[in-house]
Amino acid sequence: MGTTKVAIIGCGTIAKSAHIPAYLNNPNAEIKYFCDYNKENAERFVKEYGCGLAVQNYHDILDDQEIEAVSICTPNNAHAIVSIDFLRAGKNVLCEKPAARTYAEALEMQRVQHETGKVLNIGVVNRFNKGVNIIKSLIESGELGELYHVYASFRAHRSIPGLGGAFTTKAVAGGGVMIDWGVHFLDVVMYCSGDPTPKTVTAQTYSKLGRKMKDYTYINMWAGPPKHEGTYDVEDFVTAVIRTEGPSITMNGAWAQNIGEEEMYIDFLGDKAGIRLQYGSDFKMYSAKNGVLLETSPKFNAGDHFQNEIDAFLECIHTGEKLPSHIDTVIVTAKMIQAIYDSSEQQKEIIFD
Image 1: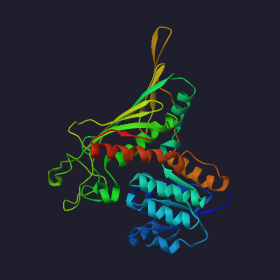
Image 2: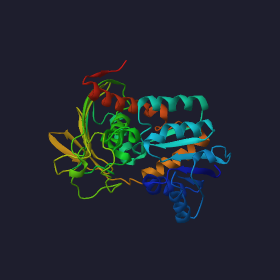
Image 3: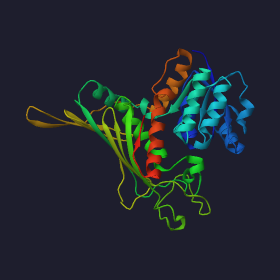
Image 4: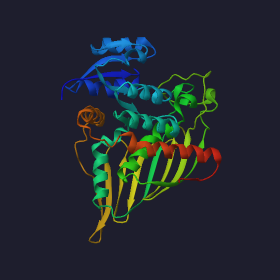
């Protein structure tokens, strides 16, 4: 396949924990640039990983003909514009989730992908998760019978990230717990269910526990410490009901709630069997046969889904394969998230054309 030269745009946590190690582990990839608006972050990565050049402005590398692949690991407000600029510069793009802050931005990304013909994949990494793909196969093969309902719960006690910063500023992130955690859960539901066409969405979001920032009590804070002089204008709780041409979907999500339990699971309910997936972990299948109730706990080598995602991205650049994470496939998730926010804001059910 030859060596593919890569640029990393955004030198934060997701780049460090997922994208960079995966590229370094792929013998066909070479990281040429680390780019961050805070050049010190990029310079630190160059020193830490012993490769690449540090740049501050991604515009400086748009015309580098050696670059074939770009990982966009910036805050959400830069996803659309940076992806579009690299696509128009002839580069293939893997953009972290969510595709964008709004459905309109995601549609523009899709339009430019069609215009340029370059790869635009979104970081819905669970589509490369071994357990998730096993569940998808079980559903497709009829092991669950008719899949009539799916329930997702992504709830934590006090887990608002970076209070007062980018995560809690709508202009930057596009939303709160729904666009941060919910995008992954909703995408798993859609993927395993065969990406059914949505029909209606009814939802309500709440901004309650983080709104009075100085009164917010927590044990630890990812992306912290809090910036009490900053902004908190996103939701910390969401509830939604979605009708599709396949199963109905309900979900409850919370960055923060006054219940000291964490629930991170998805229930797939069929008339022959059901599955509970513990997010990021194993799953159990429940069924009945010969007059007895059965509980099955499959064992498998899960592997590294981020590595799977990066490997597949690099390969599809050369093979032309359209991956399950292609913008054409996952654009519906952006549409549904927009409908969830619109339903809450407008206090009515959203009906899709």
